[in-house]
Image (cartoon, rainbow, N blue to C red; front, side, top):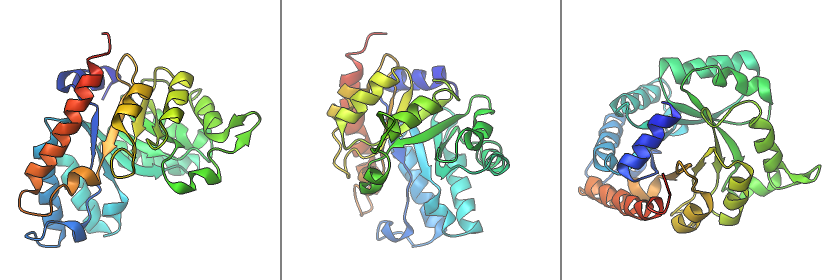
Length: 271
């Protein structure tokens, strides 16, 4: 998916919502069997319910990989159900030596045909370069995450910069705003504002709104740019809005509420 296509979806739906399909079999509604077929059907109903409000979907591969070959099949079935009009993210956090990264890139961009994959930059340019060679595909690089352990490394000073600032500065030399996004946690809006000043054009994938305490309003005010430039991810708050037979309707309601708030923020942008 190109940047222009993504922006078109955002403006058409008046939304920059990314729904996370981090589905756990043990958390399926009580009336559903606890197996992979039910997991896939649950995902399909969530997609149907949230599609009017969502421009992107993020599949956290760990929730499927844990089941081995069957889990990969359930993930592929879920991915295949997503329409090509939405931005489809593999949250896989890959990054390895160049030839291994080439295989990861082929797995997610050719075999599975995701639009984007999350990557870890620790091993440097040659570990990310293979992903950037694919046309109309994106990497979403970890920059400043929302987990407590981010303080162990990401905010440490390095030659006058915080490490995450140096990561952003360096990785931007390898890609561009048409194929490169960054993961920025929502728990500190002031960090989002500083990162937006550093990279005014790039998209940011922002987890942590809702269940982790981030404010959609604060993040939107800090991070929106002329093309929106944000994908706000919500997983648990949508997936598990209800544990009853009305789970899809409840998910639709939660996604719609987020979309309506996003529309008010987008209305303030000039196009």
